[in-house]
Image (cartoon, rainbow, N blue to C red; front, side):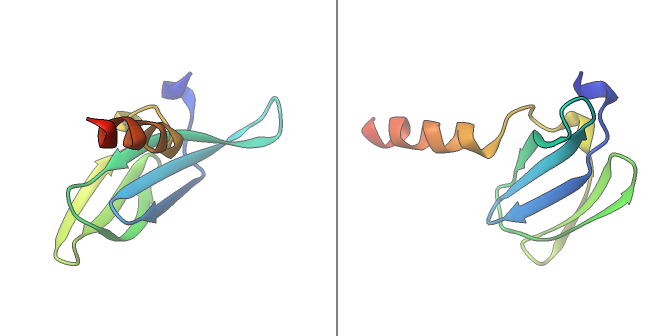
Length: 87
């Protein structure tokens, strides 16, 4: 299914970019994939369908192909964080 979706919106905070798309069948906005950076994401902009320009750490520009994003949501990172803290 992911190959056929085109992200509607990308939201960045801290080191994470979360993609969202519009589900036509249900009329809902759904989470599509995440990109996790090693530095803070300070800016993002779509430059074409499925191509996102990201400013990383205020100095580095990356061109990201959104179909290559990890097909999860930021919720999976929140669930993993407590488990990692227990180790």
